[in-house]
Length: 161
Image 1: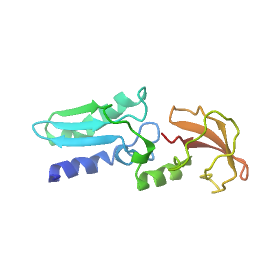
Image 2: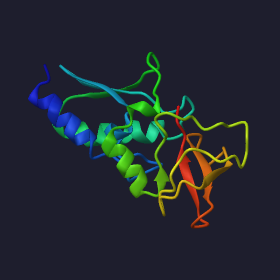
Image 3: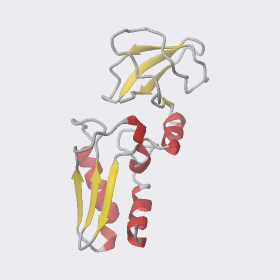
């Protein structure tokens, strides 16, 4: 059963933006795995990728946000369960779309072996399905660069994992 303090902590974690995609918070991105409250506050997070360069920044932001509770805060990165894009909430998918990022497909992984192959995806700018992957290597390991053949705009696709 979740306590009032645990719920308050979950609510506060919703206020912490992802450092690389600030329009989505850590909870809706699905990286907050567990919150435990006792003599200490323990927050477990699952990185989107093992080598995520933002881990220390997220750890710092969580500790700062929860410091007001007057208890020591431990933020532990866990790997016993693998983060997948299925952990992104429905609200988080809308947040990605609002940021101009195509949310990851729930049923089609991007075929990373074929460049400029039409993909099953919708352009977040004009909502056309006439899109293709330009480069599987985007600005971060979790994003690819795509191109819309209708509005002629590039956009980022959050890779399905």
